[in-house]
Length: 359
Image (cartoon, rainbow, N blue to C red; front, side):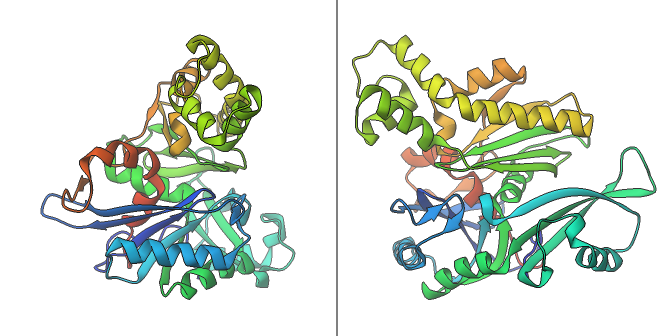
């Protein structure tokens, strides 16, 4: 069964596996007397074309990569939590009359065409979470529905099973970010923040109010678009363009100011989509005040990005810290890699925090 947000208080620990288009990342989190501890974190590259816009295109290559990642990890458990994003998953907020969960599930199934772009719900796994009473009408309630085609889910499950592992929970990238945020940050009931996870080819936006997701959006644009734009402009290699994208100077003799302008020109489509998403949220949900925008993902390190977004959104914008309240095992993890893990590990750490038996 595809679940929305099912786990955080059981006894069995699972390993988080973040499957991106550029790499796969493993996060094993264990309990301690001082709270959760990141016990292991590993990353393994994927060749281009294995994952495209969240869709699995080469199951055999993914399975081989997962097998190699776990072989090098030292993890003894074979159960894991992984997630979907991009075109593989539909997330929608809907308002319903007040009713019980069983009645709501039947209603969603019987009238799915009103809420989800699927003709036959037999081909779909779905779940929902009741957010609470509607702000403007106490006789109604707000609900988030999550759905994915069984074929898309099974493609990932088959690849992972072929690697000798078992998927205990299939999550969604955006909700993994919520789990990570809840574990690390203090917040008030009505406090609204935006978490933006910028990957190689997909960007996840999750707007959280009082620790609960109230708006999500994925768009198929990420850091690779910036790298490719710099490649074309300066006629340089992908690796050289990657270096420029992150620190604005490496691999080029160009003036730093000109480089910064070029970087932000290439990043403009991403910034524009983030801005549009926040504007849409404000117009739809009637919420003006957003306290923070937090950036995650490898491409959150694009030179000048946080400052540019802060200025254009008029919201304080900074890199999120998924290890703010989570320790790490110094025997297994190099202290020199912690800052990098903070940048790329938000989704994997959110997945690694999950437990069987939580709701």
